[in-house]
Image (cartoon, rainbow, N blue to C red; front, top):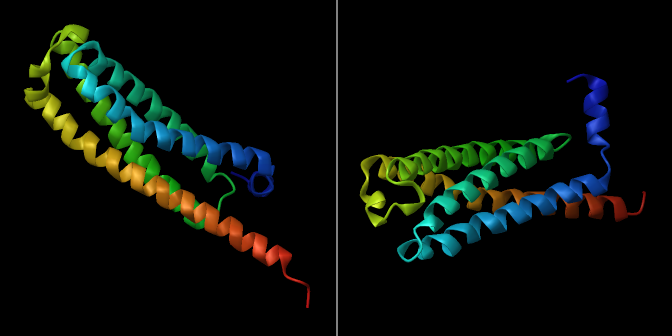
Length: 162
């Protein structure tokens, strides 16, 4: 990235940064709600397990793209936290893809609860679950850091010139 591109990114409109922050909050909410909405349904409706993983993949990819855009023109703290969230989302994505492949290999949307005891499914779940939990916590830390930096910038701007 050239110096001109970096300078232009740092002066990006506040509205686009706000949209990225709102998108990050939306992805956080979906990330938290997704397992609690779909996984209890898997006992009665077997299709819910496959839908959970498909929606999880979409959430992870969306999160990675939003984090990539959020890093442009951000402070070092936001860039580092954004990279950490991106890596954790990629881990969650890997887990979702592996678990979804196992579900489809075990009968697709008609697979029953025995898929949860499949060693391959369990392996990918050991990647997905910690990545999911850590991505949620780190996204919260990222949002708090963005808020703290915005408050600090507002306080600096409102100080009278000496």
